[in-house]
Structures are given as structure tokens and as C-alpha cells.
Image 1 (cartoon, rainbow, N blue to C red):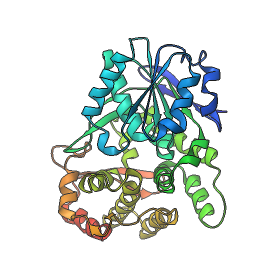
Image 2: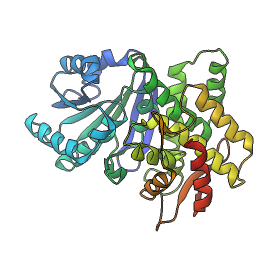
Image 3: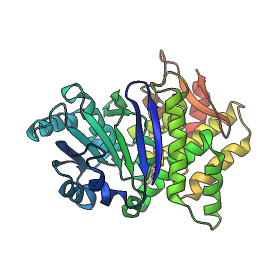
Length: 357
């Protein structure tokens, strides 16, 4: 078992365990991990029969709670229902809430755990590749509003993160590729070896997923430890996300997060080139990586195109913008992200017109 540790300013630290087959053995460590208290395992209707039922059956004092599957249910109505479910399950201040699922489950359940009785113990068990390498680590939880993504949220550090790479085997191909978008992002931010391993796999090699997950998680750990409350460099983790969140919102989430991030990375790299921050070869490398793993290289919704002006308007709700001024995470090179303020609208629109066709 690989164990990584995240140091935080409020809870001290928490462990991340990465091990194949771990999901089937959680109960063996229930006492050591303090999962023998009254526990709510919250998952969605897709994951419940795959992993939820067995996990609850093996934990000594657990109740299964399910929420609908999909980004459209990452909202305050779902959180309100979770509060009612927590009360019905008899959860108190000493209870544990486990988020079992992908990023939507982790974000939504984490926000409910952060606010129920002013905060109860919280554990992340991510089952999607995207959640394993990104959203389960770092303590950011929250839900969407009709006006934009993640506009309501909190910082809620988990007590424990349990990652079982075997869960990837049950992912649909599309969801697996979505996770690769975040892995590519982490490579672009801080670990060129991740990109090399992906390129090697595209050339006919194979991916050592447990090792790749560990490297990607370590990138996230390094950033969130340096900036736990996103005062400066933690914003780098949003590389490609200002574009991506707008693509999701305008498509009414027909474009899933990972696909939107893939195109967002291409857009951010192209904008970096347009602003003369990096060489054109970097944008070419990003597009080759995104397209090579089978992700979209243009943000499209079925046979229709997204409207560039609508996408730009959606960007105005991005949390990184300040005083109505645009704010983008861009690249000077692999491992050299930077934040650029007040990018001219004409430059952003030019890039949107390229990646929306």
C-alpha cells in the first residue's frame, strides 16, 4: 500500500492510501480508521450496486444513502435531502460521512458533511479516475448554482482518502478518459514525467495506473499544502478550467467535466501562444496528448456548436475573476503556470472560435 500524507493548517494532516483491491478490505481497518462509529455511506444510484452495498454490509454500523447520478444533481436541493437523510440515519457530531463515488458525489457529500451540525467527520473513497487524482484531495467541496459551477462551497478536509485503482475497471471508457484529462493537467503543471508516460502509452506502451495515480496525487498535494485556501498558487490547479466550466454550463452539462477540461487545456495553451507566453510547440503537444487519449479536441455538443459569446458570458461567473476582470491560468512551459489578468476579450473570443468549431 502506498501512503501519502497531506498536511493542513486546520486538521494537522490526513493520509491517502492507494492500493489495488482496497475497496474490498476497508472493513479490515474499520477500527484503525475509526469507521466503526455510526456511519453514512453516500453514493449514487450507479455506484451503489457496484460497491456501496458491499461496503455498508461489511462496516459495523453503516447506513447506505443514495443520490441521483449526474452533474445536474450537484445542487442545494440534493444537499437539503442529504440533511434529512442524515437525521433519519441518526447521525450526530461523532458520526462519519463517507463519500463513495466520483467528483459529483465527493463535492456534494463533502459540502453536506461540512455543514451538517456545523461539520461531521468526512472520508473520501473516490471511484472515478478523475476523483482519485483531483477532487478527492485538498478539501474543496461544494455545489453548483444555475448561474455557474461550484459557486456555493466550503473547505472541508477529509480525515482519510482511500483510493483503489481496481475501481477504474468498472468505469465506462468515456469516464476513464475524463480522468486522463486531469492527469495531463497535473503533468503540465508540475511533472513532465507524467506526460512522458502518457506519450509512451500512446506509442504502444502501457500505463502503470497505480504509479500514475500516485504521481498525479502528489502534484495536487504539493500545491494544496503550499496554498491550502487558494490565496495564490492553488489557482494553478484550475488550468483549463475557466474554459471548461463555461463549456459545461452552456452545454447544460451534456459535455462532462473531463472532456471539458481536455478542450480547456487546449484553449489555455492556445491562448498562451496567442499572448506570446509560450512556443507554439507547447500548444501542439497539449492537443496531441488530449486527442491521443481519445478526448475531444473541440467543445461540441452532439452535432451542434456552442455559442462563443454565451461561453464567454458564462466565464464571467468564474470564481477566479476579480471585479469583472478576466483571470486565466496559462502556461509559459511545462511546469511553469502563471495567472494572467485582464486578457483582452478579442483574444479570448479568437480562441473560443477556434476550439468551438
